[in-house]
Amino acid sequence: MDKLSPSPANSSPLTPLGFLERSATVYGDCPSIIYDDTTYSWSDTHRRCLQLASSIRSLGVRRGHVVSVVAPNIPAMYELHFAVPMAGAVLNNVNTRLDSRTISVLLRHSESKLLFVDHQSTSLVQEAISLLPTNSQPPLLVLIADHDTPPSLALRFSFTYEGLVERGDPGFNWVRPETEWDPMVLNYTSGTTSSPKGVIHSHRGMFIITVDSLLEWSVPKQPVYLWTLPMFHANGWSYPWGMAAVGGVNVCLRKFDADTIYAAVRRHGVTHMCGAPVVLNMLSNSGGGNPLLDPVHILTAGAPPPAPVLFRTESLGFVVSHGYGLTETGGLVVTCAWKPKWNRLPATERARMKARQGVRTVGLTEMDVVDPDSGASVKRDGLTLGEIVLRGGSVMLGYLKDPEGTAQCMRDNGWFYTGDVGVMHPDGYMEIKDRSKDVIISGGENLSSVEVESVLYSHPATNEAAVVARPDEFWGETPCAFVSLKAGMERKPTEKEMMEFCRAKLPHYMVPKTVVFKEELPKTSTGKIQKFVLREMAKTLGSPGTSRM
Image 1 (cartoon, rainbow, N blue to C red):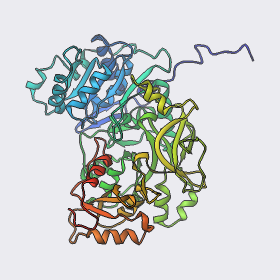
Image 2 (image 1 turned 60 degrees about the vertical axis):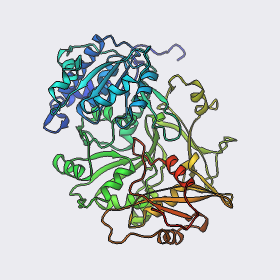
Image 3 (image 1 turned 60 degrees about the horizontal axis):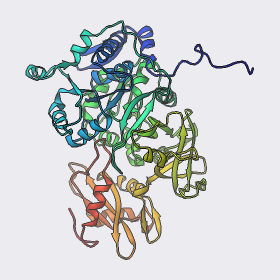
Image 4 (image 1 turned 90 degrees about the horizontal axis):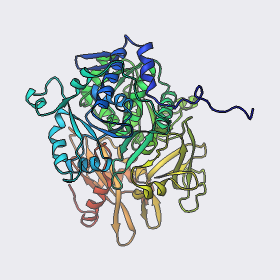
């Protein structure tokens, strides 16, 4: 046996790009993408991606170069997930909700060579380009036009997306990775706790997370997938490649609200979709949200979903699965693996169990909750707080041009330190309690803002809620709640009533000492509530007990 070793026959680099070739063979005449009145088959998508990859190479893009995209969930965005790495380049999806200054910083940091821009973002991108240093080389711009793009706009660009597709070679021999560790994507973190960092993932990592995500969610062959999760958000949690693997139908939406989602579900027979808890909250609060005729599986992550929101969403016919991951893991690597015996629990208890993040997926090697100083595992009592640590094949290669940041979270002990605070329950299921910066220390007691928020979400008038620390001379910190109320409420609750509601359900020290009602809570570009903004607002408030609006 000592003479056996790897050979070209058994050591081809892992990459999810091969899923597209297979789908063109197995599902060639089946729909791949639906967008408004446009429908492509998997044969169409395969051909178009090869042509586009060929044209990208013709523009001087080479192996390892970064190609950026500023676009919503439209067919071009989907195709670029294959075409860019098929050209040997590294795909960099840019959040469409960022401002021009931030986009300029990211383009300079990534040294992007080529930039595809949706027609609705041209002004934003051109302003970002103008902010680049005079000594830097700006990326070539390619316009992604749509049916309502003014013809005059296309004349201002040297290249258009469809023009590159049309002139490309459908027989292009796409650039395969030399090793499976070759960089494939570059994603910038949302920057909720610090300056954005460029996360680099390999072909191997993306292959592992894609297969793992399909298996863990039990995605069948040929599902109908509705794109409510932005593809720029951690590559849509790997499902652009995943849908190719199973021959699914990608229903693309440029923008959406609750009514648009329900209409798409009915029109296309949607079976699967992903979204942050804010999407669940949107669906469960929609006046037009009548119970679904057929169940729709929805995978949520991005923030701990309040149990009341899960309960309301499932009562409408959605089958909610809950997971946990980071930009640095490429997708969801912890899920609340459901046990059949839990189906016998009362509905509210089922929702509480499902709100836990859960156990590692089969593709993740290990997960633990540890004392951040000693590195020792915390007690499995559901109470002792610690930092969540992970290790596995889909963890990033590292941060671009940031060896110190990489070393800080990827320690010599072999663990990736997430910066998230959680507990481990006796049954081995993990539950997030907070980001490390969001834990509130009041009178020496550590309290979880997530637990308080879950109670606030159970109030019938609450639309959104967030709890942050407010400085207090006596207690050090006290919980301060920011709440937006549902529209159309005949009578709005008072601050005192909200506090009494919490007092009936929480220990005294966890009850908010301040409640601030806002029309809307500030959010990041990926839909997460900006607690750092709320913390600054809490510092400026008057003494507890005064009226605030």
